[in-house]
Amino acid sequence: MIASVNCKRANNVHNMHMRHDAASAPEGTQSIRRAISLLREAAEKAPGGSWRLSELAARCGIDRTTAHRILKCLVAERLIMRSPDGQRYRLGPLAFELGLAAQPIIDLRSLCSDALTRLADRCGDTVFLIVRSGLDAVCMDRREGHYPIKALTVEIGTRRPLCASAGGLAMLMLLPKEVRRRVIVENARRLATTTRLGVRTLTTMLDESMAAGCGLSHDRIIPGVVAIGVPIRDFRHEPLAALSVTAISERLGTTRRPEIVAMLRAEAAAIERALQKHDMRPTRSE
Image (cartoon, rainbow, N blue to C red; front, side, top):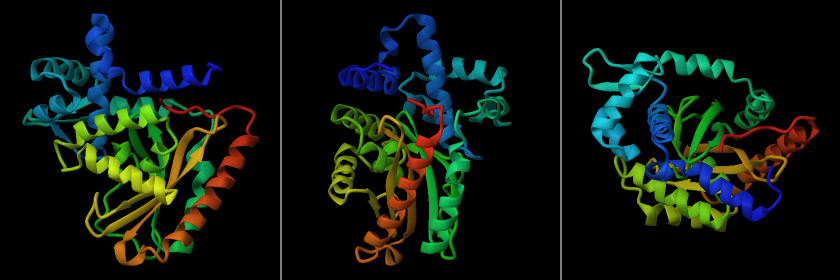
């Protein structure tokens, strides 16, 4: 770990945006980075979803010929699966197998399990544990209360741009200003293929979250749905994960929001204290 704050921030920017440096990287490194980019995008539709070649290429900023060549190799290695008609791609079985073998130093999902259950029981809405993975937010776990949103399809393992969830916004708030800006620009580029969330809208969402003191998404991601998130910090006091609550707008209006934020903060603080008790420091994906 680099002691200098400035060096640490520079490393964060580099790690989160390595795909932007691919053009100047050695050929072998460039291909690896492009393959990782394709895998990340494929994971965003998991579980069960799939992409067309043109969609993956556009979202990764790779020409179709190059994307097809890399995907062909990933299919051969079982990291990617191709649909029977050859038109769509999704994560393959080897990705799942590798995930099972990657044991974290601290099992964050188990550590947060009771907190999720308590929150769902108390508020009655759907509660999520979100972890940061570079430019993305990944749903690690969730609980449904007695009033869940049946149409909400954020399953465990779902990967979304960091700006596209209250939990992601809660973590983004704590990152350095230059990193926040880069995340917004890159997320907007990816979201442009499927939504109308541009740089201006994502910046407004971040500004509203910072003003509220918590990750806040109301009606912009899913019409009629409000979500609130608070960060979980690691031993460096950097965002490791987030807890969030999602509900229909009528159940999470401005009057009730402070109560939910207080619940989330109390559970997040307890989780942070539990993390501090571990001798080994938790790892997080950059």
